[in-house]
Length: 415
Image (cartoon, rainbow, N blue to C red; front, side, top):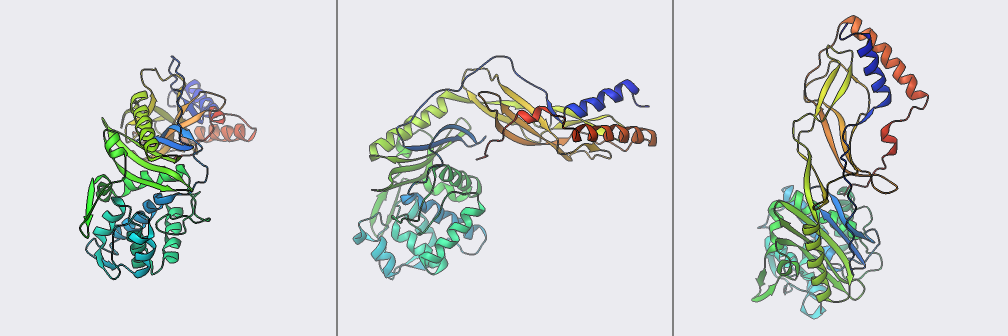
């Protein structure tokens, strides 16, 4: 009978006590790097790992100003991705677009003329580079007929991609009492644009664009102030102050920054540079588990083998303060249910949680699926009967309120 009664009881009790297995805990200590920003609201994240590097009033509702146009472009990019429109399709600039977003409006403009026929490709540049309000209205009317109808599509898409605290009323972000966003949602939107539309994202780094013989330079100060910057968008109204959503890459790392409420354009540029430099210099990315290498093993009931190795299909990296050994990092294997044979190789069976155990509550840094690294065939009748008895005892133990290591872990909202 497999490896004997003692081995079976040992594995059974292990399953009782550790449906979550804590298999690693480094020794040395590190503490969170302290930093602050003059921006009233800000969020700085590491894009690859979704780690929050700095957060200040990130869930506070703020007027979006021209950051709204990122959502306008998301709707348009989605239509392009679905094949419903193409870059060569044309829309006609209405008199409403000209009056509300043209030169006479006193706001940022692409300098469209009433009745002008313009390609979708040019309109994208007119928004991403020139921040044209007339271009935003022309897209809204071209796709949905009216600004109001387009705003409904904006809010529907926002909900689909996880912008839970933002509401849009128009395509350009000119002040409206019912329009608001959060810096967390703006960072989420930026990450979504980068991840979902890589072929469209490149437009955000274009230095200038000329339309109707008017050349305008990209308004994003990060492109000039931050080495490696390649997007995304500025915003400004009297109500919102100076805002920015930006991204930059260095040495394989990408940071995403969203901030709002700065008092001047110069302060916005300086704060963008300061925060990006902080993110790149104060933190580093480390690997805590290799792709397709075992990080632990799972007890398998009723199988020809007692256990199956657990492997991730991708390297598992986390961000830690640079130069400090990552103490307080726990790697926890979380099972949703007891595993029973037959078990196929490559079957998803658990989740690996990288947890930072620092402060009053633990924080989940990463959650990655784990897969069976080997197949486990069904065992003999005797082996299955014995394991069924162990499983029954396990369930009774759980019903009596047995606790596990996982009870200490508090979930963190993923970005």
